[in-house]
Length: 168
Image (tube, rainbow, N blue to C red):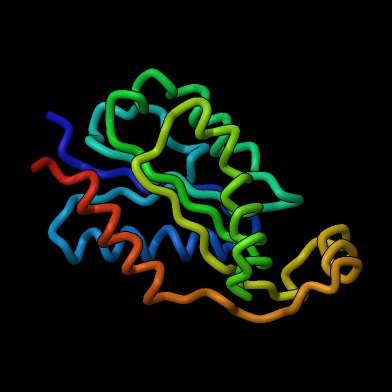
């Protein structure tokens, strides 16, 4: 019987991977067996009783890898509780309109598999790690550099998700 929870993610520069790891750590602290893996590496969902899937937001959208993962595993994912999370730089101000836009980044995957919960978290931007193209874009949009992740909010969200996916 499936007894593990999958935390699958895509990450371009590591910030979202670290958020996924924090979610996995929080679930493990609650005594749950967890696998935290890049979505592109997951082939079989049979060991999992739930999935938490995340992506950074680029240009208002998720990266292709988690979207492809959800498309490919749509039938299995519809039979287990699923939660989505997105990591973006624009949400660190807490502006409700910006948070709505960040949540909209998940609209495409929500049409495929309806989640029991969604989370939106601020990310980290380090210009030195960016590609030239991404550095140019961040300069154009005047993105602030720094680490804006709120680890306590991320851990609290993981605990809340666990309440929704645990069997009663």
